Image 1: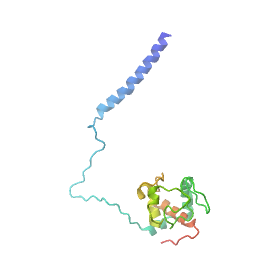
Image 2: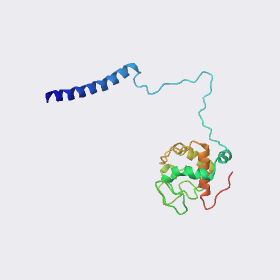
Image 3: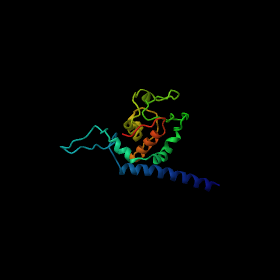
Length: 173
C-alpha cells in the first residue's frame, strides 16, 4: 500500500516540476523587457502615413455585386437575432421589415443601445454598408455583437434583400 502512495506522490511531483520547468525555460529563451506589450514599428523616413480612413465608397458598384437570392442565404446569419417578416416580432435584435431608409433606432417597442438611439441618421445604402461591414466600428458603443460581413458581395446582397423585404422597396442608385 505504501508503494502505491509513493508512486502517486512521485507522479504529482513530476507533473508539477515539468509544468513549472517548461514555464521557466521558456521565460529564459524568450526573455523580454518588463512592461513591453508590443514592438514599436517606425515608418521609414520620408514616407507618408495615412491616418484617416477613406469612407467614400461607390455604392452603385458594390450593389451591382449582389443579388437577392444570395442575400437571403447570407441573412440566415442575421435571422438568429432579427425577424424580416412583415408584422414580425423583435427578437434579440429589432425587427427588420422595411428597415432600409427608415431612421436608425426607430422601432418604438425595442430597447436600443444609447449609441444607436443617439445616432440620428437614416439607414441609407452607405450607412447600411458601413454598419454591416463592422457594426462595432461604424456606430461605436452599440450592443450588436456581430463581427460583420467582410465581403462586398455579401453586404450588397443583404442590403438588396433588406430592401426587397419592405412595404416600398427603393430604387437602386
